[in-house]
Image 1 (cartoon, rainbow over the protein chains, first blue to last red):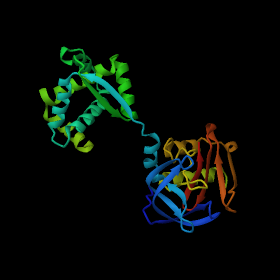
Image 2 (spheres, each protein chain N blue to C red):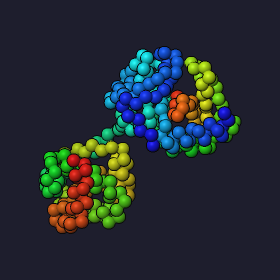
Image 3 (cartoon, helix red, strand yellow):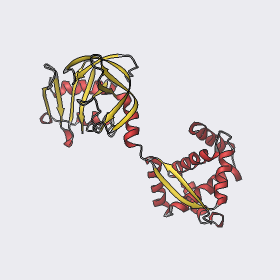
Image 4 (spheres, one colour):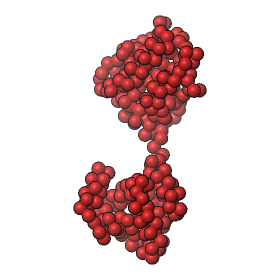
Length: 198
Length: 95
């Protein structure tokens, strides 16, 4: 795939100069919606005569896409304080940084993998209705992207559980995997995930 | 150039990543170009070009640059407008 670099020359049609012009790729702020919206730090081609942004290479699309479609969803539930402590303890075990942030990566990862893991789905069902899962003294708010949100909704469908029950089940699965019965394999897998995420 | 030649050339550019997207008169990105906003993928555009019939293709002149052919594909209610400035393809619209 062709990758353009900053300073590279090309050609394009410049509507301001009304001609085919020589262009140079540079990092620009690209506007849209009549100038009401913008995307920063986009590689774009500017006219060598008038400096107008005249074209955008395909390689800049992921950055633009992020701006247009990076919808964040919020999953909010109430859980007992000891479930929050489990999340923080489990996150802290890896010692990569702030457990408060790592706990969110951990939960998002479990939502992502539970969707296609029958054993984990069964565990979530079992854990979510246990006495240990009961209580509601603490509010947990989790920001997720479209992909995780879709998996979460799918999980709700296949388990017939509420979002609160699913998150409680997931936290207790994390408790099993990291705090109660950790295996080297599982810890190594999670370590890679948190290392990359953090 | 007929459909077959234009399509082959367009797909070659798409596969090799030699793709640029035209901005509007004010230098803004055009939200009607769903390829630049990431709502359609390069692979999907290739499939749309491959499914275009002869009656769904036309070529006209660029409204500013004399001698520059603008190609329009209209497969499956899509509207794909592009031209070539060698060695790249430039998309005006994909919606």
